[in-house]
Amino acid sequence: MIEEQKFYWKLLDTMKDGVYFADSHRKITYWNKAAETITGYKSAEVRGKFCGDNVLEHIDEEGNNLCTG
Image (tube, rainbow, N blue to C red):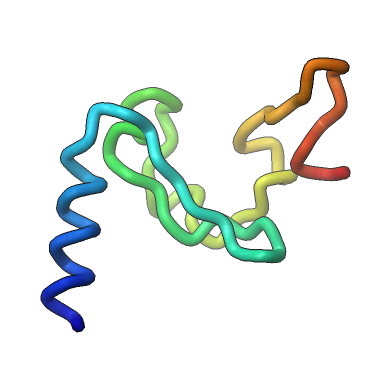
């Protein structure tokens, strides 16, 4: 199982698209290398923070903040 997980993390880290995961409480648990490049935030800076901590500004079509709503 651990080898399989390592494969997936390596795959995500080689993608050109920014990828991050958040748990059910909206706490960031994973941040790939492309996300670092796109945002300028290193993984260590954002892991453990919450989506609503103004790391990202996710809004819907009407301008509602999706991380705090």
